Amino acid sequence: TDEEVDKYYMKTPPQGMCLGSSNGRIAWFCISPPTQDDLISAANQEKKKRIDQANEHMNSRRWPGKAALGRLTGDELAQYNLWLDYLDALEAVDTSVAQNIACPPPEKLYT
Image (cartoon, rainbow, N blue to C red; front, side, top):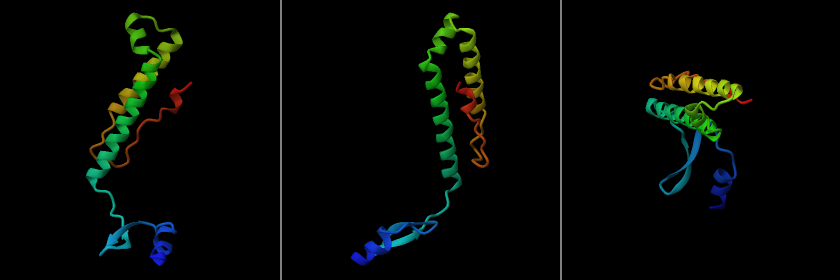
């Protein structure tokens, strides 16, 4: 109904609530907090995303191939080593507890 549209769809959801259906009618429902498995899954996804981004960054500059052929310049080699250290730090992140995870920031690597 128009009243339901005004009450539910035209408003920002209350804190901790989402829209749902109850007996065929629109209603607000409490959003349950994420489970430990949800937190671990999210942490693993974030870790994988950062690893993929780091590999993409290095591969876009062809550093692995250049390194294998000994063709990295001094600056490239220094940057490549920083990114490899960053990957090592990411790999060392323990996502099994999914609390207070501190992924290393890549911002300092971009020059």
